Length: 183
Image (cartoon, rainbow, N blue to C red; front, side, top):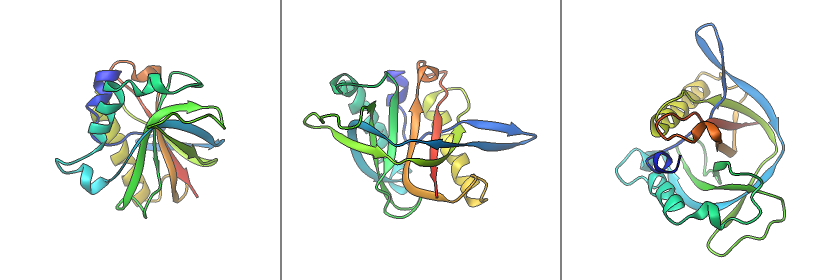
């Protein structure tokens, strides 16, 4: 899980049901929760260049043992939270890599707290395979569904997140869920 996620260059998120040939996201209502981790500000345009920050952030997350620095983790799952959107998929956003913690948790020095907003989410599940490949492909599917108004609602651009559980334990054979916040 660690080495493969380090090579992740951009994004992830998913849980998909297949109806005939079309992938239809599962719609869920998610309660709000808190994540503590490390954060960076970037954009999809920047990530498409050689100067992308997301891969470097994943590398920092694992090399500096950030997960082990987070007290009171709810579990061992990893969250990649997209928040503070400037506009839409074309604008800047913040990415926070971390773990879910109980509300009101103290934030260690050098880390940040992000709140995942309660609300409706479209869940898109990646294919199974190399984590960097399947997560980017899942985001491409999200953007395509968004353009076709096929997510189950308009995107809220408040918080989205990738959920890395036991299915992402092997970097070469991972599956990740993307939760896309809806209005």
